[in-house]
Amino acid sequence: MSDSDTIRSAFLSELNKITSLSDLENVKIRYLGRKGEINTFLSKLKNIQPNERKKVGLKVNELKKEIKKRLEERKVSLLLRQEKELKIDVTLPGFKYPRGGLHPVTIAIEEVAKIFEKIGFIHLSYPEVEWEYYAFESLNMPDGHPARDDFETFFIDSKPHPKLGQMLLTPHTSSGQNREMKRLKKPPIRMINIARCYRPNWDVTHVPMFYQFEGLCVDERINLTHLKGTLDYFVKEFFGAKREARVRPFHFQFTEPSFEVDVSCGACFGKGTVSGEKCRVCKSGWLELGGAGMVHPFVLKEGDIDPKKYSGFAFGWGVERVFMMKEDFKLDDLRTMYSGDVRFLEQF
Image (cartoon, one colour):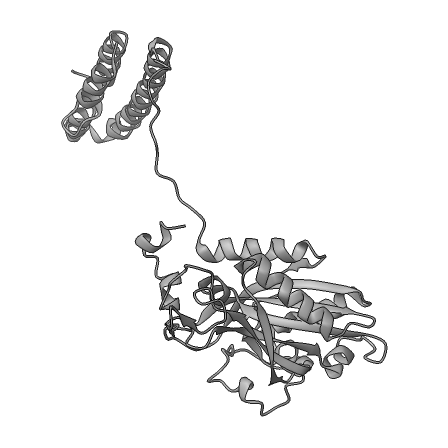
């Protein structure tokens, strides 16, 4: 073919004869392939006078774009025609396509949120990148408290705030308590804060990033019976009617009095034995759930709430931990949750 006009004429002639996708592919190779008409013509540009070479080259490139555009338009036209001619037998069984599912932690978060929403707790999330004041000072943890050591907390290498201190990755959802009290300014407060937390731990029961849910209730005349009733309600809703909750005296800086919360074992239901033998799951009949207690007056005062008029309770537990304690959920390594192992995730 002597020039681009000849190539164009030949292409348009063949384009009109295309009746199938295979025909279209053959024409595409003939004109746009590595050894096609366009590349062959371009390879001969060196034989054209220099003052004409640029002009011819531009013209060939325009032709190449036109060929690509016309072939794409014809392809769309052929596909539409095939769709109209395609006959579907609606009596044939459909194809079952594989589909993904929610991560077990996401399942647990949604379930926990719904359980507490039924009794008036508002689901919130507060910053993962936090200041020392909210994570420690506002929760009655002074300078020198062990939790403020860099072995326990991820500090961010940044310029400290003159009032709020160093920036860090929040080690617990309790840092949201002060923010929520100051946001609402006045009780009643019923908050369930579910968020990611960070601590430099990595073993079968700990991961550096994990989820916690924090409950906070502040109002007039709130007492221990309200806390215990809330714990009992959650345990039966989440774990089942046969499971029980109990509290044991403990110490936390931000609650007074403070408690560790246990849930009865799903294998022995608090008996400690199964068929006359010691329970292999719990050894004693109970599994540790998390911490709880009455909000410390100092924490209320830091949240601009009068501790003489108002009282409250709080609790904070790991989402992964409570999910692992569910009946028939046997997981001996928490890190499996975040391993990305499809064999594990496909069970949910």
